[in-house]
Length: 106
Image (cartoon, rainbow, N blue to C red):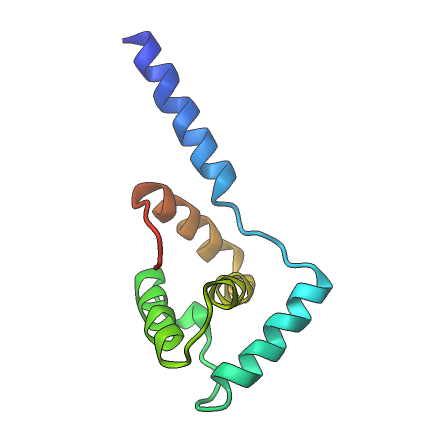
């Protein structure tokens, strides 16, 4: 029983460490902004990610990625970039949700 608890705690800690928001370098931020203007703002106004729940935002990002024909690296960069636009409370919520529902966006 004790061993199982230790494993559960270790898995939880590893999951939290892996799901922390990745900070973008200035170069990555500039590229993400360029990509946003090229692929997103070309068709619609800016939508604030903080105005959507994480599942809603994720669904929209997936739909728009297909529509704008984003490559997986472009999609990942835009997801990271839009995540930096969320308040800190949303980032913690997202980290907890990510550990609860693993999976890939592709």
